[in-house]
Image 1: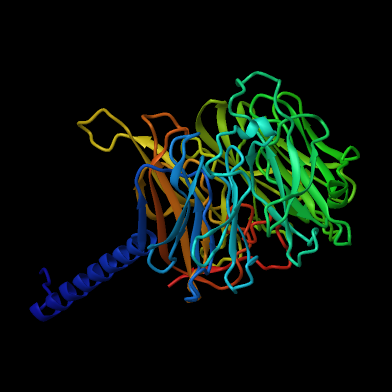
Image 2: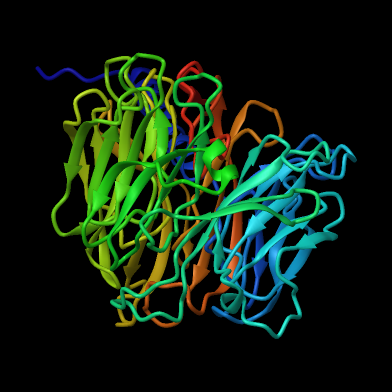
Amino acid sequence: MPTTLPRSRKAKHYLIAALCLFVLIAVTIYITATNLRPISWTAHFEGIGTGSSPRLVDLNNDGVLDVVIGAGGAENQPSDTAVIAMDGATGNLLWHVAGRNQVVGSALFYDVTADGVPDVFIGGRTAELLAVNGANGEVLWRFFPYDSTINPADSGIYNFYNPQLIPDQDKDGKEDLLISNGGDYTVKAHDPRRPVGKLMVISSRSGQIISEVEVPDGKETYMSVVKVSLKNNETEDVIFGTGGETVGGNLYRTTLQDILKGDISSSVVLATGKNKGFIAPPALVDLTGDDVFDIVVNSVDGRTMAINGANDLLLWSVRVPDTEIYSSPAIGYFNQDEVPDVFTNYGIGVWPMIKRSTQRMIDGKSGKVLATDTAGIFSYASPVVADFNNDGFDDVLLSVNSLIRLNLYDPSKRHISQLMVFDFHDNVTYQVGDTLLGSNVASTPWIGDMDGDGKMEIVNTTIELNGQRNDIDRPTNLRVFHVKTPYTVNKDIKWGGYMGSNYDGIFRSEQKAASITAN
């Protein structure tokens, strides 16, 4: 005889099932919401784009880091919005500064006015280099006059890249600037006759040249310099590179003292590219445990190399065939050992026909490739690093662009951009934040805690391109996004921006891995 449950027991079972279903739905919604939480604010600038990376500093003394980024309209055209400062709390415009051309460099902060607010030093195309009062946006000086009718190239001045601070050289009580200059857009792609790149020392107070010297191989330069005491002694070493997309070059080590003397002929060649050079700045990190910074660099011809800082010898090299590299390596603790590891984003193809990207995570100790991915179309933006799930292993955050059909019935394609996390320990990749219209072509995201509440925040950008060309000659509709995430920052983030969290290209191992947990 079949048995049946009493109605009360049936009702109880139904109630339990309903509760389980409710909990499952709630958990699903929570996970979805926390991983795809919408942006906190957006700043939109029509008619301009960016090839600069956001850098953050408190300009209005409200305790929240504000956002400074370079910008510009069509290449070689003036713009009234070439340097932008935004309130980190709201996204509102604090100030903007005009420029003769695109300001593609990223900001250096230093209080040269002694008013308690960091001032902004930033460079760009065709001799754009200026100092801006961080408190009010007043231009303190321009290296080349804004309204000049003279071509800067006629004076031997070309693009300025990212500066670094050095000790006071002109005895005005202020630290000064070390910066590279080079790159002539008027030269045809495969013409080897190019202006020689320079290393320059410039007064932070006046903008006047203190010292300048040409690179020793007579090649062009596009690389931002990295200044470091490799052996933690009194010698200030400077790493710089030459060559470009179609011209060979070298990676060099010299000293600040030789630059100041105007003679760097004794520079040490660390690596050579026969047909292509070195563009993206290197990362300095101790891979050998000898308390000497080693040099990790990407060459345009698709190689990622580690060079021993103690003896200038090659530690290892990884070459990805049929690729080129225009972004910097990111450094983090991705595997089980105590040696920092390396992540690089490679472009598949030959400039200017680079369409797709591929990624490699490399063991910093051995140079062995530990992980491979192929995510997105080509981008100049570099990866950044933090531990998103508090498992003791760093993860990579990369801005990934795609070209897709948004409508099944519309054959046209649109660019979209997504912030993707690469978790190597759990072998998963997932998205943080919203899917955004437009592309992040050349702007490395920033990650950190802007307001001191212990939550991780991300600043990212997109631009719209002219048609489907993946370049920044005619960018428009710059959007700057602030993403407030649910993840908790437990420790310092050390590679959270372009050239690291300190903006100097140095990975300091004494800073422990950043742990971020989702609440």
